[in-house]
Image (cartoon, rainbow, N blue to C red; front, side, top):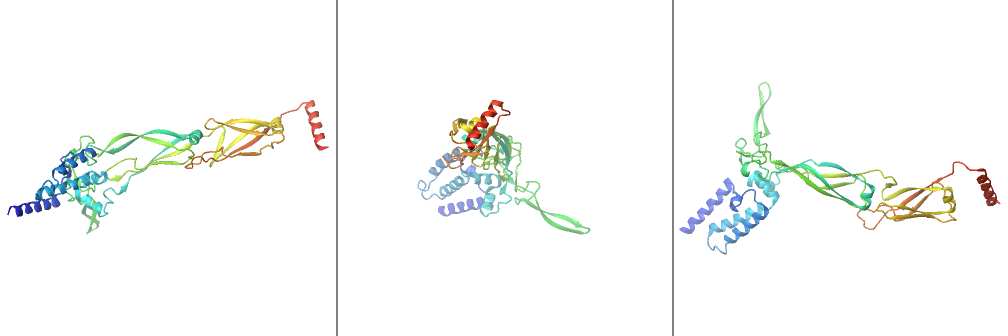
Length: 351
């Protein structure tokens, strides 16, 4: 008789859970602002206490053990916990059925910002700490807007999030239309008292610092994406924060793809008799540019120096080329003596 009574009580408790929903925070004996560490600690303690091996034949302890495991499964998962806090078990069931379009399936807007970079930054790699202001879900009420996170089913829509309203469509004609419940905003749940931290807004302002890594070989206009780091809100998934690189003009080099272009100035003597020059590169090493004495440099000719261009992004150790264009500067005027000497040179070379 006693065993039968225990079974009836367990069945009654199960049905009560199904009807009114179970409070998983109470099951784990924790507050609604508990951290993940608090949840795991409570789970280990209670699961050990109510384990069936320690309570043979105790149906109530067995049920409590099942509730403890279920509570841990939900509250230790950030996404499941968020849905449970906002919509209870009913919301979790809708999520499992894929009916989550109006319960957080939407995606919030992306945030965009430009980062000014030099060609040196793109050659060597660089970092930036970017500070941004955004709203984040209130930790005190976990995005419910309710004091202590306690919510209740909206009495105006009975937890459905929608209401049927009769709308006049003409003289003597009306029709019923389904509209979002204005009292709960379509969430199906309301609260009696506002959260003291967010004042019922569900979100609070926060200053977020993102550590942006500009990798070697990145290009002007390339984007660096921080997924789900934009504005938070319990009704949608956060968008991304997207930084776009904007390269400043450089005084000596021009870049196209992985190729660097450099203009080298020569006087007539250097163009004819050869030269040796060094150019300071983007990481402060020096690249040699030279011509042998028997190598006459033509104006606007181009010399390609292999491996002295930009690093190839995501291909360590690989570099593009440097194209050096020679600008030969001719003298503005010649003395009579210089002219006679040049005439003799040309006369000799043509003989």
